[in-house]
Image (cartoon, rainbow, N blue to C red):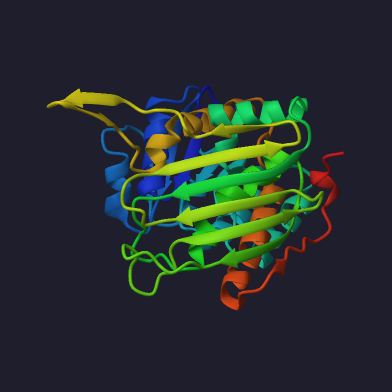
Amino acid sequence: MSELLGVAVLGAGHMGADHVRRLDRVVSGARVAAVADPDADRAKEAVAGMNGVAVHTTAQAALDAPGVEAVLIASPGEAHEEALLAAFARGLPVLCEKPMVPDSAGALRVVEAEARGGRRLAQIGFMRRYDTEYRQLKSLLDGGRLGRPLMLHCVHRNVSSPPHFTSAMLVTSSVSHEIDAARWLLGQELTAVSVLRPRPSAGAPTGLLDPQFVLFETERGALVDVEIFVNCGFGYEVRCEAVCESGSARIGEAHGMLVTAAGAAREEVPQDYLVRFADAYDRQVQAWVDATRRGRVTGPDAWDGYAASVAAEAGARSLETGTRTPVVLAPRPALYDRS
């Protein structure tokens, strides 16, 4: 491996461009070796001012570019399966943004392909596991001081949704973070999901069922509820409260900068996830680079990506049918055994 880990970044949109910046200016031990995006001008803009970066319009070309030793996938979710399988075929370690693969069948194909190879190559980008507050809550729950967790109450609000956003994507795209966080915090698989629909907000685009209330059941009887509201209009908010037998703990209440001017005080509210979780993204990518340089793969694995896709897909069915929907997982390959 070279002195600096050569990374191919697939996707140069909002998320991909931010990862290019992060690898170039924040993370140590890595460099951007190649960038791929169907929009060549967008890819060139993402690497403007950087030297020695190959720009391509296809993922395959970027993976085969000189100096590429690892891959960061930040392209749209529907392109992830092909990119992951191509990286596996080349033996390249991967950090893949969520969703790993939007549909559960494709996610299972990724799990099976990695398992056939006999070694982990993929880390999935559930960055909340790297957020300071989420890590504190995880440590508290694992320590058992508050007794068994009984419920998680979650809030996930965005200022506005992208033009292409559908009602199902409130669960499959946005709530996928809560799905992984719940599995990780509780150490339990989700077994069923029910999605309830209050009347849509006047701020939601026509036809978009926003907000929604999502209720998950777990294998050991805990409940997880999520308020997902992607057109709240006022800020990006993520909160989680764990209610346990002997107490509760809440995160996401940290106060931002307080501005006092013109006879009034105003607290600033983050406007998107790249602001609220900036430190978590930095720690996630740094941890991935450090592990990859040591020949290891850590963090959320492909099974976590698959489990999230199955639960999200079940949530989309519940939204459509209005009924409680089971979350049914395939047998877990030995590669992902946590015993």
